[in-house]
Length: 58
Image (tube, rainbow, N blue to C red; front, side):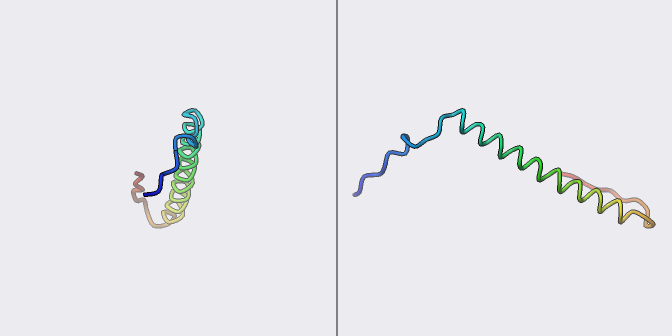
């Protein structure tokens, strides 16, 4: 069997890993907010002249 390379030597420090994870979460929140904003704008356009309806967010 071939020896496996030592992956612990290439690991990022916990602070860098946390900052990367935090940036990913912020990015996902921005994407979700963009989707919700677009959904709300679409709902408002559809509501004009048709009465109201519920918009659910998850």
